[in-house]
Amino acid sequence: MDRDVVIVGAGVVGAAIARELSRYELDVTLLEAGPDVGAGTSKANTALLHTGFDAKPGTLEARLVARGYELLSEYAPSAGIPVERTGALLVAWDETQRAEFAGIVERTHANGYRAIRELDRDELYRREPKLGLGALGALEVPDEALICPFTTPLAFATEAVLAGCELRRDTTVTGVERLPGGGFRVDAGGGSLTTRHLVNAAGLRSDELDRLLGYERFTVTPRRGELIVFDKLTRPLVRHIVLAVPTQVSKGVLVSPTVFGNVMVGPTAEDVPSKADTSSTAAGLDYLVAETDRILPALLDFDVTAVYVGLRAATEHADFQIAFEDGYACVGGIRSTGLSASMAIAEHVREGLELSAAPRAPRPPPRMPNIGEAFPRPYREAELIASDPDYGRVVCFCERVTRGEIRDALASPVAPVDLDGLRRRTRAHMGRCQGFFCGARLAGMLAEADRG
Image 1 (cartoon, helix red, strand yellow):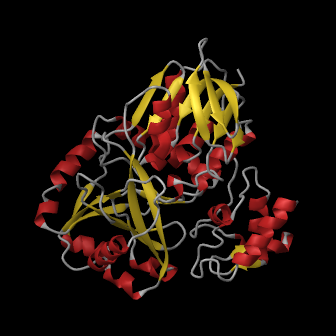
Image 2 (spheres, rainbow, N blue to C red):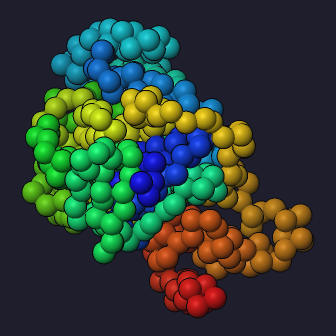
Image 3 (cartoon, rainbow, N blue to C red):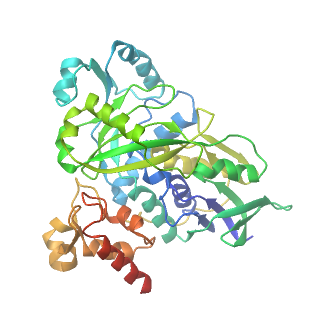
């Protein structure tokens, strides 16, 4: 066999699995059809570190989100992943929604989370004075947090690569079959390789890969989520993650700060036929504007920085679709909670594959460059600039990204190959001007790194 384990899909879940398995004496390959790690669904979510308080009790998702919250809360500070513990307020806007509180609290307690408590109207408005009129009260979930959706999968992949994992990008899987004597042959990127174990973490394509091996367990129906990102001047308007009372279809529209210093509103929830349809719609954006006017109307006095769209891997099932058969792990139906659950999913996959491999000598995780607004940034670090003036040479003025940060990203173990990858490692190109000022210079630095 060429490899011990091949993992298909380098989103946050696939990267977490690669990190987990690379901690053992295993030859691991991580395949990604796109140009980068975390460049699909993983980059376009609400970027919350969930406690799992509102998951359906008794489900695999409930267990893995709660466990993942613990693991990622411990891992993030050591790896330099930005996390802000703002807490969340789940707001009722009418009596029907407020009547749901008792059931939500009951589910929360069944999930083992007991810090939830109800706030009356007066306390809610003391906590969030800019909320729109008409809120009746809220449930406070103090341990919900913001997390960087970009740094997380990059940290996992970087740790895996430094431990010996082979990462192949721009490598689409075109075929897979079981071998008569055990193991699998994977056709990908114009070639093939054999492996003892195969992990399907292909996200939106996980059902297609599962069918190649003869299974008919689930069908992924992409659920489009549109979001609006408001200018950084809006950050003082909201102190917590403001959640909606969930429905049968989605968790509703939230208003939340981001670790980058903005405020975002979304997502919508619309099932679409195409797994590549990340276009925004007039109807979706009009709906989000109307929801903004209802929830936090002061936001509409400020500029919009960006609109982005993500596709969640929704299925006909209400739970994660994780199964194990003879060396094969199918990890499907991982929706918006996949970021929070990622490390627990990886742990679950390792245990489910029943790998007989010795652990490698422990080593600390790589320290990722900080791109969170609430943490020290190079342009403000006088000692760092004195030691290397490139950290004082700003290239992206909207996000205050320096030449030193871009240089470091281009030389990193999992380096970017395009402007989107550079943006997710440094924040360059994601500010008010959306690259109008710095885009050409960034493209030149990418081209120079490619030639070098």
